[in-house]
Amino acid sequence: MKEDKRPEGKASFITEARREQIREAAIRTLDEIGYVNASLAQIAKRAGISTALISYHFADKYDLMNHLLTHLVERSAAYILERVEREKSSTDQLNAYIVASLDYQAAHPARNAALVEIVFNARTPDGVPYYKLGDDEDEDPVQRELRRILTEGQRAGEFGAFRVDVVATMIQGAIGEYMLIPEAGKKTDPQTYRDELVRMIHRIVKG
Amino acid sequence: MKEDKRPEGKASFITEARREQIREAAIRTLDEIGYVNASLAQIAKRAGISTALISYHFADKYDLMNHLLTHLVERSAAYILERVEREKSSTDQLNAYIVASLDYQAAHPARNAALVEIVFNARTPDGVPYYKLGDDEDEDPVQRELRRILTEGQRAGEFGAFRVDVVATMIQGAIGEYMLIPEAGKKTDPQTYRDELVRMIHRIVKG
DNA sequence: ATAAAATTTGATTAATCGATCAGAAAACTG
DNA sequence: CAGTTTTCTGATCGATTAATCAAATTTTAT
Image 1 (tube, helix red, strand yellow):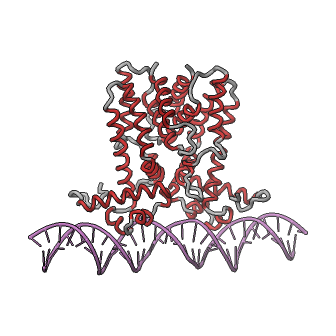
Image 2: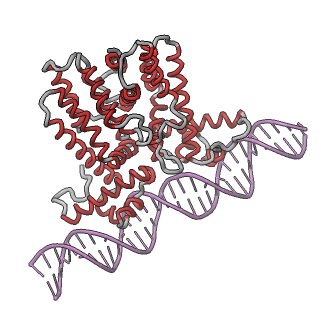
Image 3: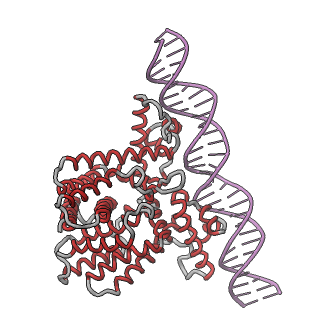
């Protein structure tokens, strides 16, 4: 399962800094010209380095994109989970989950665009697209946390009766859908959408 | 605004048949290997024709993808709108909208995959990705119909108070999210998801 | 300071891309 | 039937792709 060029031992200081630089350049590239046009040359140009240097630090393009995807997912997950952990009741945790998810993507639009580009464009070596990849294997921790909140809320009597997986999918969809709408076409400002979405979700989980 | 090679006059019988064949091959190609790998050569191979023939019938790759996207959206919209029109009350129309949307994509998974591939990969000549394109211009008629149902339901007193655009986005997200989940990873069968989603949406729009 | 190791580049590779063109083949017209 | 137009192919174009390699440079270790 080697995906880095140096699986054994920790990366040197220089290597880690360079990798970070390449990641940032890749994010900017994906955001600006999309996955289809995001060649190594374009990424290298934005990083101000040669294309061969990318090949030196990453096995191949798939390795780079895979690495970046993992990195982006982890950062997003860490932010959301940290905000959820602060709350005690299931109701407050659910609110925190929704608000934190919307906040993170609003605060980092380029990261978000890069994430979308990778998920909907990249494929495993077997040709399976990431977005069709079941979360069964490594199990998306964020999605899992949402289901945990809902289940726990029902057990504690805070929430009413509903199918947890269905409602979890709905919430995830409502969050993801807003994130895809471009700034320009947004009929509702983020603040209003956030508040109203929370209100509507509560109509579902309560009662 | 010429995007076809023969803007004036109707296409001949042969040309129309060939175009349909190329569309079908493109759908299969996008579904099987994704937009990134969907070269004209790959599409031509699946259609059993030469790559030059595609160039003969479509101005360029962008023209082909744009044409296919429009075609797919129109077919899907026609199906959904027809099902909605059969119903009288806003409640029944909303149900029909949700069920028809889920049904269509379940019945045509390849078309759906192709649609997703184009929307999330293709960009206008200006470099703007389709998924970031506001629906303000040509205004997605399906999305518009959903908002109309909700607004009308409120006016008629069938539905309670909520922000139409927010709830419309939620519903669209809940539908789209399920459509992206691969068959394998589905914890809930389509029938159950359909019924439960309708139930949950009613908790929102009623009271 | 010097040798060794790690990092970086420019040049080059073969493969594939979308697109074009001349001409063959097929369909249509009178 | 002959002549014209439409349809189609095979060959080929220049551009771009990801990746490799030897050599140059920088960093690290001694």
